[in-house]
Amino acid sequence: MSSENKKWFSLNLGRKKTEIFGSCGCGKTSGGCGGASSTDQISNEDFDREVLAAIGEERKKDGFDQVFNVKMDRRTAFKKLTASLAIGAGAISTSCSVISGDDTKEKAQIDWEEQFKGNYKLMTPEEKGATVERLVRSYQLRTGKTISMSSKNAEEDVLFGYAFNISKCQGYMDCVSACVEENNQDRDSQMQYIRIHEMKDGKGFNFNEADDNYYHEVPAEGHFYMGTQCFHCDNPPCVEVCPVQATWREDDGLVVVDYDWCVGCRYCMAACPYDGRRFNWSKPEVPETEVNKNQHYLGNRMRKKGVMEKCTFCVQRSRAGKNPACVEACPTGARIFGNLLDPDSTIRWVLENKKVFRLKEDLGTEPKFWYFMD
Amino acid sequence: MSNRPVMSRLIYLFVLLLIVFSCKHDEGEYHSVIDRIEAESENYHGTSISSEKYIEGIETIEITEGGHTFLIPERKGQIKLYACTECHTKPLSKMQSKDVKKAHWDIKLAHANKNTMNCITCHNPDNMNSLKSLTGSDIDFNRSYNVCNQCHTKQFEDWKGGAHGKRIGGWAPPRASMTCVNCHNPHKPHFESRWPARFNTQKVKERE
Ligand code: SF4
Ligand code: SF4
Figure (spheres, each protein chain N blue to C red):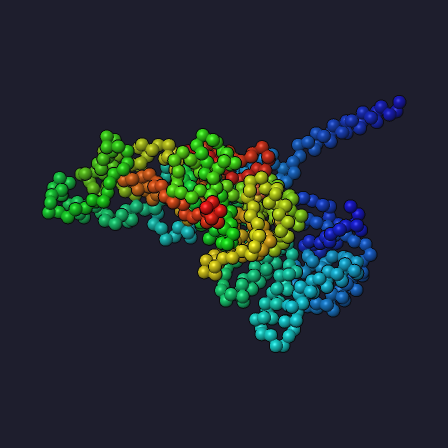
């Protein structure tokens, strides 16, 4: 498609270089995707002057380059600036006002910087740290409570995998409870990343006839139980369809979502063959006392209305060496988690010694979630 | 006429390109995630992530079974009235008199049937401080899994490898695993049926 009749505005994400990138559907964390090109540009000096006049010092802030270091024609440039300024107008007016307090000014400043930050995937570690710091501060200003938020990256030589023992699961749902609490999921809509399916003996894995909302003592006679959640596919179709690359596979195999970059189109939800994704149809509500304050940017930090979320194998826990909350909560030991690259890990022993299988293996999605039986 | 060599050269080129590119996969160049795991774990050097700090408060002992070395919780310190000989000062027969306060009255054995097991299948009446094997040799309370694995051999295999049981701390090394009696009451080892930890009340409403 020629750049002139492009209907959307492309950003030169995270790159100072202005050369044009070919389109690439890569799911990699590192490296940039996307391109920008346009003719009829205003000269660099002109652009700089306009920007300086409009927002001055803000220009130096991180994430700014991702949005503004893009050559565009005068009209688009001004359109962009006005749109953004409208959003930031409140911010500016409060931050320049002599009457409003320091806190309000700081809040406005944070809002402004958050508005113009880039895609998390393309941020440098410093930028990641900065946005996390802003989010922590903003939460503090709003609620007076202090949370801890991590931006820890994937570790070398780690690839997370999961195994589920169908013979052990009794349908107690302790995992679901732990997951909801750990990941600050919306209590109103009763969002749950994990589903436990109650299946009839002798019917096989018949998801159509499974009862996902059973309401009786468990395990029920003549039934068995199995859990599903996001399988963190190694070849994730959900990542491929995202039009803004708000979801991707990290180097340790976790498929994550940048809640601040997601536009809520729900393509990924449609593309997932495993019902692994959940959408925030309303503003997620978590009682203040129940908020889990140990958070990760890509994990259980507070979401907003209209964004996608899903299981992250508790990135805030797993990257710190802990087991995901579901694994820790399961009283029967049906859930096993670990590093697939460590030949001595228990997950590797399971893969090598038990008869494991995955769901819909023929799709080639390569889930990193295996089922087995005793 | 001169077209011929050009054509055949083109075909050669095509075949060559086909050979070169047909084996190429996108993204990481692996056929499957299993291939990827095999290739990437070949020169695995370990990571800086450790679960040590999560097991700090727990007293553990290191065991090596069938090529697996890992930690399990120390047991004797967890038994409220250990050492048993503090009460069991006399042989059992002498303690079953009316004037001695009743003990262990709450234990109802629900483990195999009466033909197969009774108290002294695992407990040694002559040495209360220790468990015993089927053939009568002592087994330390800290290694009580050796009592269980006499019958439950399959579970023992899975437990050593990590397919049965639960980890303590986290996924990262060092590995610490629960031992049999941390999850199973040895006198009543099955899991009880109970109500699930949560209900989807929204769905319940829809059903009513
Ligand atoms: S299970 Fe679904 S959401 Fe999770 S990685 Fe696979 S395709 Fe994506
Ligand atoms: S809902 Fe969000 S993460 Fe999913 S495809 Fe759309 S923008 Fe991407």
